Length: 301
Image (tube, rainbow, N blue to C red; front, side):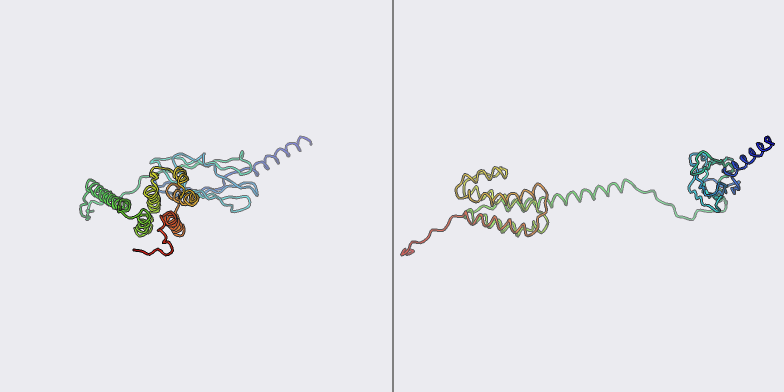
């Protein structure tokens, strides 16, 4: 009696193990496909209820490339796999792939099926004639010459534009006359504002010229050679001149604003530009020599 129960238990366990496994129920695969043309293989798998199945892409046959894999359940214990494959061999080959349970990777099953890959059919008609006109090969040498000519023209235009700008700035810097230094400096400021540099967004060149007007004025009016000085050195030289010493803080703000544009590439607003221009005008006006005052009762000759 005990021996019979033992045999029955073993049978039930083996049936349960098989029911919980992963096996192929059906596979719909073409036996012959053309070379380098995708085809679809359909595989239906049985598995334990509630489980999901995954494809082990590393197990794929190297003669075929997998371009798409769609696995979707069609019942609680059945999953359908639609594989889109791309053949790369001209011969009879065997496609293999392995499937496994998602929660129990150790339970797997392998699918394999033979496929004959045939050559692509070509249209071969002896009566076929070429009706297209003969095509002329592209002349790469001509294209290269055209590109070089365009590049040379662009470089020439850039050269002339930069030269014109340098001449415009030089004309502002080389104005020489016998007027008083403050009159010359104020006229240079007016010429700079009307030069179009600001409108052409040449902010750095605008502030370089504006700062040079200050340096030239200090040299002409007070004999300070600050043409090569840094901003800090210029301020130290100003402190040695009595009329300029009280204005060092004002000049410091002016130079700082210019340095931000020239070296930090800051784009100033029009309000900032007007403030700096007016600051320089005021500095020149305050340090210009005052006209002699007439004494009471003095009559001009």
